[in-house]
Image (cartoon, rainbow, N blue to C red; front, side, top):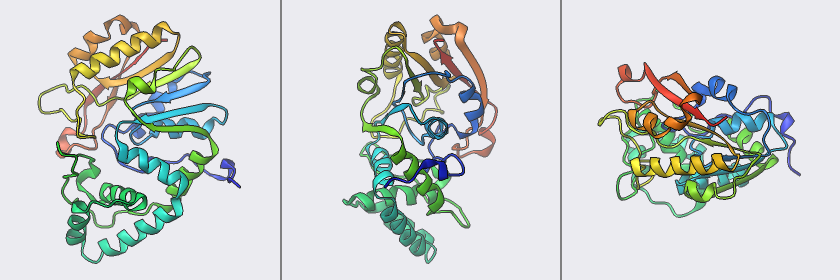
Length: 286
């Protein structure tokens, strides 16, 4: 029998630290979420901060979630279906890590596990112990972030993983690995779409799209705008997060009356002085 979600005392938090995560901006973003919608689409799921916050409060909505990172999608499915086994594997990682942090970290970083629990526990372990919690892969799809400088990282996060598992079980949720165009093809009037793509760089040195071994370039931003326009014509309500760059402002100029500028910090930046003072955009069609 599935446990009633009402027993969870607070909203689950993202179980991974993801570049562009939205936890710090939830009070602003949720203020712009429509009050009524039948289905919720989020095709750039990442850490899922917005989804978790909304799903905690709403029982009757259908949630259609997706991401192009197959390892991340597998993590959501594993936490939903096999959370106890995953916690046990993470506890084993934690014990070994604290015996010899550097040696164990690089051993796991170089490993290529095949089993579901092993693959997901590796991703979560590396995310908790790597430099800045940065998920990045190279052109061959290999995770390549160095060891972080943590005194006592919370590798297991047992209570939150259980809370995440319970909400994924107790809601009407679809989780798939697919491109945003495929994920949104059936969105229609009465639905709400939240788009949080890899941000368009505001400078040559700020480009970061290496969540997968592909990239999300300006051509993809144009594809996203075309989908935004098509959904708008169908009566779908859309909220988009992106950088305050000249290219994005120009691309979405038709919707300039519904652009909100917000201040945000970049906790993922390797230079602490560059983590503050950023402005990004919320663009909506309602």
